[in-house]
Amino acid sequence: MELVKISEFIWEIPKSGEMKVPARIYASSNLIESVRRDQTLQQARNVACLPGIQRMSYVMPDAHQGYGFPIGGVAAFDLDEGIISPGGVGYDINCGVRLLRTDYKESDITARRKELLAEIFKEVPAGVGKGGITKLSRNVLKEILVKGAEWAVEQGYGMSEDLDRTEERGRMKDASCEFISERAMERGVPQLGTLGAGNHFLEIQKVDEIYDAEVAKAFGIDEKGQVLVMIHCGSRGLGHQIATDYIEMMENKFGYKGLPDRELINAPFKSELGQRYYKSMCAAVNYAFANRQMIAHWVRDVFARIMGSAKGMRQIYDVCHNVAKVEKHPIGGGEKLLCIHRKGATRSFGPGRPEIPEVYRHVGQPVLIPGSMGTASYVLVGTAEAEEMSFSSTAHGAGRVMSRNEALRRFRGEQIRDELAKRGVELKATSWKGVAEEASAAYKNVDEVVRVSHETKLGKVVARVVPIGVMKG
Amino acid sequence: MGPGLYMMKKRYEILEHIADGKFRAFGRTLEEALGNAALAMVSLMWDWERVRPEIKEMVKVKASNLEQLIVKFLTECLYLLEVKSFLLGGIDELKIEKVWKDNRTVYELRAELSGGLISPEHEIYGQVKAVTYNDMKIEKTDSGLVLQVVVDM
Image (cartoon, rainbow over all chains, first blue to last red; front, top):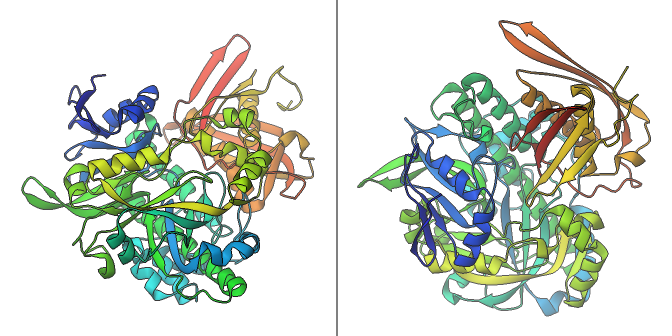
């Protein structure tokens, strides 16, 4: 396949064959090598062939092979001519990241770090098959699917100002639970307020470096050594089941024979089935917002109990990195509503966008990029430039480079725990084998991903944070 | 005779996959291969050979094609884990019927699974989120069938 280097960090697959638009990859020469080794480029090309796609099929710096769409793929579709695809969102609908600030410095919590982590581990259910603490009725679940984090705040989980600092204010208005299967609802009941497992984690972090003091200040990040808390999880079995259900329904309705990859199955955005998927997906997004809202509340509770106060534990932001949204973007001299798919990509609106909370509107939207377990994570800020470059999107994390088998052969969970302890990082996990599978050496270097985002201006780096306590499901 | 009553030399093999889980399951029949695919999938999460058969779960799924049948049956095993805390330990019986209904072919699967409940004695070390069609293969060989499946982790 032809891959043209446009500039140091920009690569393009020119339009050919069935492609309706070119594909563009943001990567360093180092990152493009790992992308070339798997199916990412072919998948970006396949996305470029879908009906109604606008401008380009974009690939973010942390991309790797996914199902249908690549992970790190961004594609926008015309609402009339275009499609919506479960494979363009991913199975873990609204997998995302929430970041809380505190007034504490590392030195304030050093003596109680172990206790803090142990208590959080007790309060926040994690691991496979571990149910939440609340036994939900079907009616309450329906309310959550429609109201998202708003429901959680109404129930006393957190504060209404958390909603101001959440993408979509924690509630996608188009959500409906009318078209969600019984199976999906059943999987949603026991898992609300749980972290899950795999690459999901909760970290007590400290600010390691501040690159843009003014923007950092606006976000509530004041100094090096300041303690933060990051929560990374999604919509759990409910979202996974909705994706599975709609892939099947779309196959049965439209067939998959002409598709280069069955996971590219899609429906016209305005078709009945397209709208049913969109509304159900919005409901799963809301479930995940409520999920992170509850977990954040329990974390604050633990800080209040152990440290004496949770004052100043304001939410910095909450982003979703697996989602499809209707957003207004400039196209061909005018503005147009488009259905933007971000699969393993984070929205990065620049200053002035009305979707950004008022307190941040003068600087841009906070972008949260989690690293792998035990490594650095980053806070970035969205830019005006990202609008033209990627429909205002950037990377979402590190991305694996080593299989789980390989990680299990090379590492042992207990050994990773001991090495982290030497670096002053406490680790609690539900399974040591699970820890070995998620070893940071199995992931791409997140520093490199962030460097490309910063250099290309997809999202500019504000601060680097490192863990001091890690909880893994 | 159920597929659990005779044994292939090897039920499945786990393949390398950078981001997710991938395996090939073997069987002399489709039923046997599909049962082994379920065991392969749960082996990415727990050691099913150590799960004592204490409870039974019945599974029924319908699908329009074989690939869908694989996805739906394996997804049902994830449902049993998440909703009923059921750890699959063995396949007691699995039957697939191909029927003609409403002018199209429908595959109907019925299975009887045995296993136990989640408990501290069983370490759960991974999480399969979903079953995908990505790189799925259904191959006929001299000795039967091979099913290749990629699961999202």
